[in-house]
Image (cartoon, rainbow, N blue to C red; front, side, top):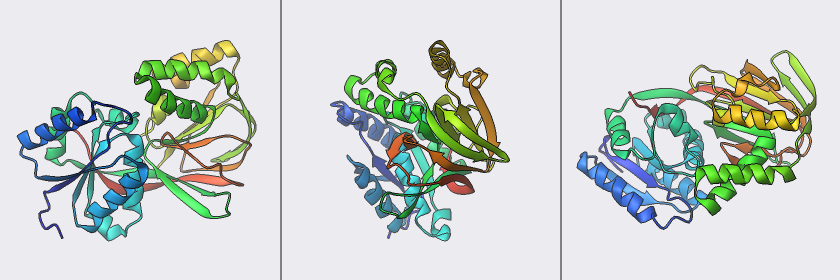
Length: 311
């Protein structure tokens, strides 16, 4: 067992298909050593590797686990932490050095991919904040009751489909801008609205909806006022706009003014009940899950993860 509480377990998740991944890690490793960080390092290429290696860090007694990766790897890490008992989880702090295809949660806190030195300095200060996690509870096609925790958001509908396209095009093009443009082009082949039945607070919504975002944090710009420490979720329900208004909506999303669009209806709640969402894709922190069978709900658990934040 590891006895030094200040020793970090560092998990490096290289970007898919990037020949520069070794150089990237060399830069991060040099920065860690230059700042006198005592750490052990492992590398994962696949999702199941992240789960296995984070569980290894937990079982071997590491008190600081740092993920060098993006939203998906971070999501796997928090789900691993939530699978252990509360007493063990309370002793562990989770840190992040952004290095993924999507780094929305890192950007929320002000971490930048190109400033590793500053990120490591912040992590060394060990400023811990207890943060909330959202959680989706659903039944899969096998009839099994499942749940998945999230840091950013759950998307239901068109944006979930676009985010899936964006992840695929980002691997193809490399550039965030090109991947976003490519996703918009491919969007013309996507379904633009879905029959939904939702219950949010006392409101019941029964109509066609383009997309729903339930955000624990900024939700990739769709829930810009959400914060992961108030015990509540922000919800943006978007009705189907005209085509010209649709592109206006994407402009407002990029510029951080998404809630200003007249087709966006915002809510704040502790739980969303989805009674029906016909053929609407569902993503958790940008990663698709299998289509839930029947009704499902999304809630929040308050102050359950120790997260290392900047000043």
